[in-house]
Length: 225
Length: 218
Image 1 (cartoon, rainbow over the protein chains, first blue to last red):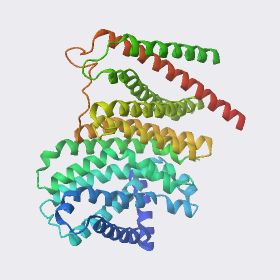
Image 2 (cartoon, chains in turn purple, orange; image 1 turned 90 degrees about the horizontal axis):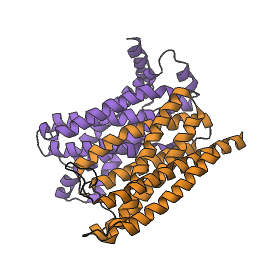
Image 3 (tube, rainbow over the protein chains, first blue to last red; image 1 turned 30 degrees about the vertical axis):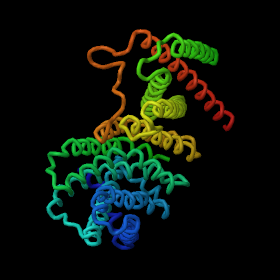
Image 4 (cartoon, rainbow over the protein chains, first blue to last red; image 1 turned 45 degrees about the vertical axis):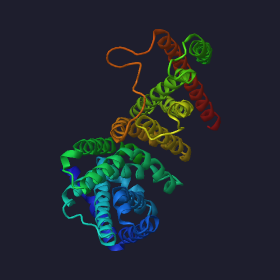
């Protein structure tokens, strides 16, 4: 119970900072918009080609926006010299991880919803029927992505070349999540039932459990100084 | 300690020599693939060493976080380097075999893909180690990454197998007994032993070098 409260304090602090500064969300919204431009220019106006690559494009957008968002997980603490403050928080340090993870998850889900809406508007998609299945796939995939991302953000927070190192470490580890989400998204968008991609959903669920558990267990080691 | 290491070195050298003689001389020419098949005697032991090396990184990383023994950290570091080397050898020998057999240097087959992902994952591990100057922080961060990377291996495996597969089905250990003649298995086993000895030798040397570097820096 006290663990959940401690995690919540971290979420609340980050949400408050974000609400007042709107730094990350505004920039990520603009970035998402630009990504859509880039996709459009790269693929041209051909509808069929777009439909064939849509699941991959969607996740490419999520991952690129996610890399930028997750990489900033500890930026407030670092730039304002609050790292020590975080370290001084009493009790189990993994509560900080859970809090940061929850905040990142929230951020990513908001950005993904924005990106999806932009896709629907600009590429004239009909996804209403696929929305529940898509939401499940996105949620499962995002938990895994954010779980490792939050951990690696802490790992690279003190490294000079962190902007470079963070994606270089995160992307290879995320290959299973990426393959599973793209395949499942493809099936869902084609109107197939979720049962047809049950093996991918199980893999995603297993990955989420492993990543979150590993994050909770190892985060403590990254915070010490 | 150094004497034990050099014993391993000499044993590895003798084993490799025996392995070459067995693989390129004694073992028969494979009927369909011809002499190209002989690269298997290097390819399969390489990938074996790579997986052993990453398993050692995993165990040594846990040991480091639990005990904070610097020897465990040096073991993880050395083993990761040797593992990356042998993963590279696996990919290189596989390409050389794949060109005449499949007609292509590279294809996104399941097992090629998972080895490639392993390769980039542990190159990332070495990059992380290289970028953190502070000795103790580098060890802790690398240990966490070593654990995550190892836990990820089964996930990578299943995801890419489901994604696609066209690789040779394993011919050594499959239900209903091996499809290989005995002499080929012997040649392969000799190389397995030789490569394993080479792994021990490399890791011992590299770990000692890391220790000496630290002592020199201190």
